[in-house]
Image (tube, rainbow, N blue to C red; front, side, top):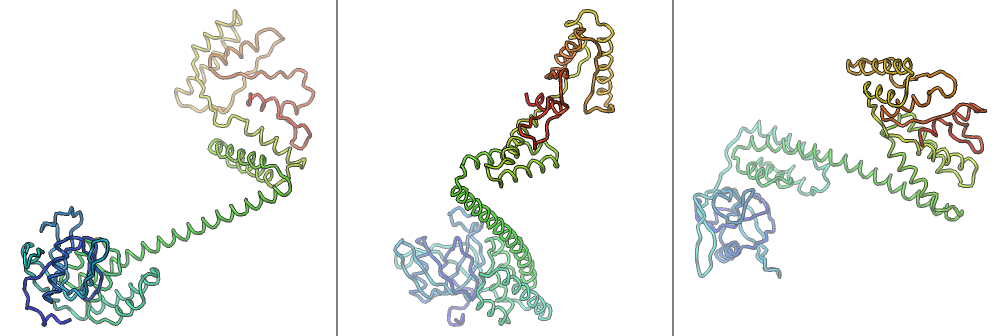
Length: 428
């Protein structure tokens, strides 16, 4: 299409305002019209064989179509076809020709009982440029867009061929810009600039940024795909295992027990050492793989049940107050001055060390040894200390123990193995 076949510029043209698309010269694109004034402008242009100026609204457009909500620079072009579609909209096929600028404000024109927007339009000519520098920039842009097309498979090959065969740098920028998902503001700023060097540099930066975004997106998509495949594989294998177990007569209750154990293991993860966690997890995995009728399966199940009975995470902070310890000892005991004095002295040192933030040797646990014949008050002293510190007390009588295993626990491989008195004291 030759502009010389139409009225010389500047001239008054019908104006169509597009809210969503941003079009460029040399593009043939369908445009859907919903506003009555745009439909009338298209009708007038086709009847009079007139060019039109296609403008776009700004970001944050609220529907009023005032001059300050519309970009003044747009695309001059012609309407090749106009079709009314059943939903009430009108579809036109618009062919862009050149850049144009609205001079002044929009005007409402009424001709032959139709109303549409029009305005004085100035043709924006392409400025001369430094051919050597622009050629170099075009070469860089072509390299970038080729690399980008390898990452983004949605770019048509015929369009890539058109870009590589085009000599006009203005057209190259417009063609490349049409490939990218630019915001209306970015697209307009790039389109409105009349400095081709600035436009090429900006386009190279945008392509580089898009390539990095596409690379990261592809990497994330690959990781997600791998994770989904792994999850699907695990699910498939678990379902297969369930069916096999069902055929073998394995009770589904076992799966529920294993799942319950795993949930309990998850709950205590933050409170146990890494080696302890790995050992429990290892035993749980062994238990899950074993046949439920095997003797070792029963042993491991008993072991896991005892492990998860331990009060992991139930931490009681020690309330250390020497005065309360002394009051509890005096309240519960008459006389016994020397033992009470020694106990108060012991806790005084600990309280003073805490206040001065001094770490005592063996601070992880302390042993107080009371020696004396039965009935002199050893156990009652321990009860008073526990009451004063507000800590639970477990009484373990060593008299009558036949085997040290009763204190520290049996080996798991023994039939009827039980944890020792110490562990049982923690659980109860």
